[in-house]
Length: 390
Image (tube, rainbow, N blue to C red):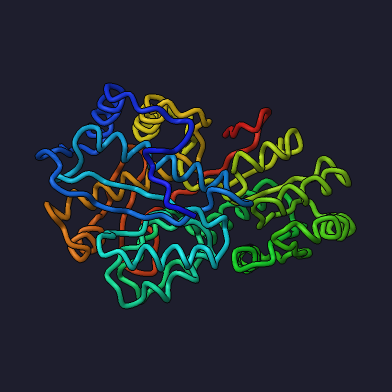
């Protein structure tokens, strides 16, 4: 599929005066002037992401959140004399398409970095292409252990890991009372990793997984999994699912036992999943790796909503969009510290030097390869209308 420049994304208008105001708010949030001169160069970022397919709502939200940030910055003149160009190419959450996109991106000598590519299988396939290069792989959208290789100094993870999300969910479940805890997981590396994390977390509390059932990524096996788990009468079910498997399992589980407490990781929170589930999503507890996007007590959320509104986006602001925005803010700060006309190596060194940087209620701290810069995990619940509440 042809590249899609961010300046042509549907549903967004760009009144320059509003962009300038949004950029001014963002610059204040960064706590340092962004503009040093009229832009003399362009920092070219490329993104392989699901803009169609089963996780399109996640991909579109992450992309638009980053766009809101970069467009506001560019309207004010850029950073250190350079504007940032983010171009996304759809991979429909297909590994082969993602790899092809990356091959084409990396063949372009003007590429500066790969930004917020989505999906655990895509990250696993990307790492061999990145090994031994100086191409920054910035803020991939996955909490998988595989995305945190200890021998890559050009891979920068921001979001908390799936293991950290799982630990928070298990801690909460065990605190509120349930002891008979089952797991339903997607038949891929994401689902299996969460299952292992849940087992380890339960063992630390003297518990064990009551039962574990798997569902294919196209949703096959959801009805059988729901029936099997209903038969062992769990007091809570942890769902390591994303996209269609979530919808299929919840529908069958609710039909068998409407009041069964369900728990899920942040990847459940796409608008498409919540819309498909409708009232059946109400009451599901979901871990999140960024703050509530309506929590205007936090400066970073206020900055995000300002950019989001003033860009004229017709899409509801979400955790996913806020995550894209935060990733862009962190990238901008590292780029600012890398100085004028930075090389990729300059940027890599500047990013690893980013310690205890507070965006205004969201702290990032890059400690070294194999880790993630944020350990923020919050618990929310799906309320009426598919809105998250705390």
